[in-house]
Length: 251
Image 1 (cartoon, rainbow, N blue to C red):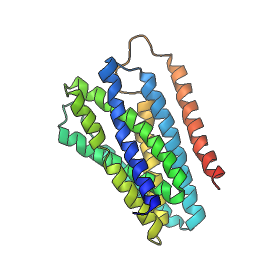
Image 2 (image 1 turned 90 degrees about the vertical axis):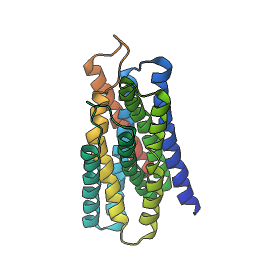
Image 3 (image 1 turned 60 degrees about the horizontal axis):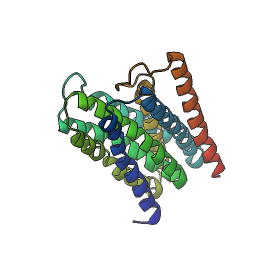
């Protein structure tokens, strides 16, 4: 494995492993502030939205195959919709460990595709997106641990599920990177797939959980709803702008 591919593997693997940190707040404190989840999801959503924009623009600018780009974006959005709709966990019942693991693996795979696609554009952009997804993985594990705790699942089991469910992320990141870099003619489709996955993920999951996180909150400690909305909008805007500016600075 060459050095760039190894960097993609290590970065995406670290992003997957830090999911274990999302289990710690509930184990140590027994409750978490909603603002923790909201801020983490807002920042991650902004970074991912900015990365999706960069992938789409780069696909048009560098490879000039708009049809492949659009088809790739549609495929990425459709795949993400499938994962969200048909492979999700029914929160009204106690899910099996296999169901949780299956949903997490499918979910992590599309995030891996996005990291790989971003790394095709620029390795530094791939590292930025890996960092954004690491933040998202922590918030996601926090939500998952909250749900599984109410169902009586032990903390050690929850931590293992949070990490194991993300191992598809580094595998798909490397595969996508190698395909996008080495297989001529598929670059635009790969970039489009990554962009479509990111944008759909932000709209369908990160924004809803940023505004209405399904986690227990410490009592009487939530700020007014208007302040929450302003903070989330500001964090998303700043994070999105940061990715776009950073990408332009790399040129």
